[in-house]
Length: 222
Image (tube, rainbow, N blue to C red; front, top):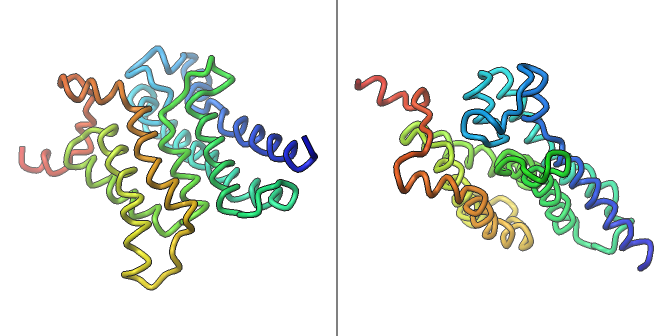
């Protein structure tokens, strides 16, 4: 194996380790001395941190989780592009970003049990095609307000990504997304559905946790 492929493996490993930082678990231990996975929904993510510890720790977790996806895709890929055998920056950004997502979802620092990967994927998207990020966020917020389900909002927002990637350039005149990102955008919803498979089961039997405070229209009409 030549140096270029060794460098690629090293970059992906660094990206995975960056994504593996167990933000919510660390915050749970620092704020209250607990393992966040043993409370609330049992998920090591920002939503469960909000449920158990409040909005300030949750906001910190979400920002750091987004940063964990942005850093490998925006910084690591650009710094080491010429040292790897990958000639396409977009492809290397996807590889580095998704390595971070896998690190977040299957963190080596916590028995390979992490979060759902939504925030880290959002950071990766922010690095590669930032104009789509606020649109997907709006879909997430709208769905959350209407349903109160964070899991459903995450899945629908991820499903909107390839739609925006395909429709925005023709209607706005902006530069089309690279083919590598389009293909990856079509795969992202399936990954999010996979990581939310337990939530889907709870949605089907009516036991999924609902974020009632987000349903502002319901509160007004109550």
